[in-house]
Length: 546
Image (cartoon, rainbow, N blue to C red; front, top):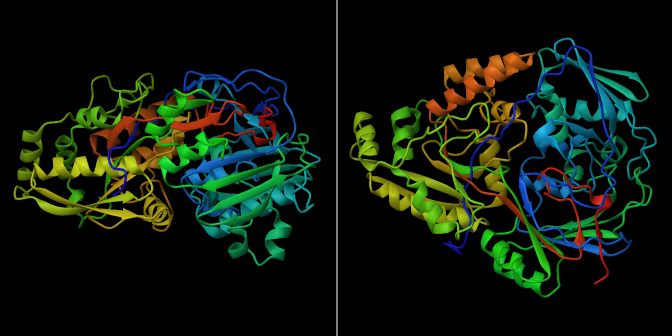
């Protein structure tokens, strides 16, 4: 349990602004990646912008990160924060536009435009011409279909499992036909559907090789990965959007925040992504660095394993008791380091979201917690385990405080630290029955998508976020209604109803709005997390001479 009481912990909220409806035969024309070198600014990220200067070529960008990549080149198993290793090497059809929080719009990458028809059951994409994978394989509709078939064969995507057919209309036009409306297909395309070379995959033995060998269309190509040490990429000179400024990108795997800060100060690294909060604040106050605090992107909380009726947490009274027993205000006061970037949260939607309930929440009340446990026949308490990812010190701090608070209501909780790999397995496929799990939830500007993903009533074997949380019959019915919606009005109404039901059913204990963070040397010009943690136009990143 190292680095307890260092900084950071938990966040929550699902994001504002509801997903707008695309009308029948509505066409969206995608924009190209930003051509400005100044990072876009929105209300979601507090940024200190480095001095403006003319872009220059050269240099290796050294990026410190606390975790190893779980998957590099097999998209059907990519999930969570570790996907940021793929941003410079693999690409998506589209990504969020710089003003996504206001516009709910996208910018084209491997697609130039798209349209939906047939009540959002048919989606047609017009692909960018003149693009090649790093091995020389041409990017076209056949390559796009091959990648979709890879997802279908893997069976890991609830979206692609609902595909009725995929049609190659011509060399650069592909059409996805679904059995049901797919009102969130664009946000799924923009956040998690990456494309790899069919030739490289099939020539090198398939999945096992691809897991650690990405071959994409991005501005950088893969060189090597040494787990626990580094991941290297070099410039792809034939990149379709023009020669990238940087010669190379190297990720340095450094789990310890104190070591990471020391390396930044010594000039041994240029960027520290997903930096621990204490070190971020300290470096942001120093000359030579600037930090970004991207709010509303990673709600963190505590999730009871309540999927099965045999779990002690299947009884809603027990889940509610756990929530009443936890003093969020005290936890935030202890670990926020006085930063105004941290806010206590009692529900998933943030203020301004259509599902936000003013004043709603189960506030700290030990007497109510004890009464609920007595009503559930558990006045004498019970034993449980809190699972915590080993590399995230702030979660360890939170677990210790929660452990003490639960003891006040006769619940004895042990703390077990797990590896990042075990964390991802628990997150997407379930953790032991009758236990608690601390996790972060990647948030999106498209709140309907977040609700569909987090409250999905998945069939066995289909991953979902926080897999072991409860899904009540009422939630499943509302989830189905949301997925079947085809107009802005019905989508909005179903989203609000599902969000409120999830709150009422005490699915999880949302803790606080805690920003994702990154620290940059002041000579680095990059748009990473300037408006989304899911976007990095790596080809436009450059460094001043230093």
